[in-house]
Image 1: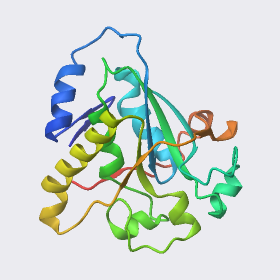
Image 2: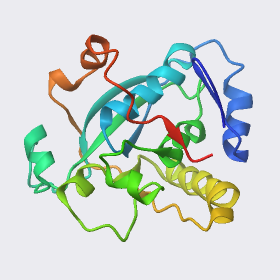
Image 3: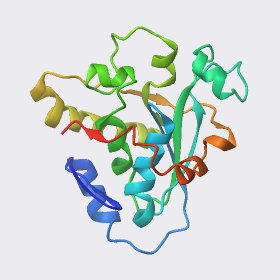
Image 4: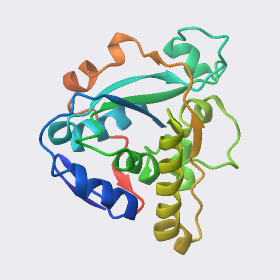
Length: 211
């Protein structure tokens, strides 16, 4: 995986094919699609997309909560932290499919090791099915939430390619879940991008790749 400012250059076949097509486009199509990813602290996930795809590929991100018990409407951050709602911190990515492909967007969710306070770092892989269902494990679980059959198919394909090339040789298994997207709730205003803009030295929680 090659990382340069404003750009992620993929090394996975499906993502490479997507990149080779969309990275050459400069004219927006006017079409907007949505992708949703849960991968630990939503600030860290948002920072990845903003830093490497936002400047040159035109993605827009919002942090919030999804994947929870539908009886909880518009959950608060404190409720999500408690684990009682089953909601995960997540990042919603709005993107123009002419400028960036869904296969490229998936990569950060399956390759990043999170901060040392997270249960994910302890397992050295994106989530472990053997971890106890603590409040933190529920809140910070790793999930690709798909919005269409096409997204679901691509999510499985890219994950399988990453598994085969980078994880299986190490005897590790990716257990990032791939689920249908459910109800989305924006996080409180103080959690949105202004936090990262006002705290540029907060320290990244998503800065270690698995390869």
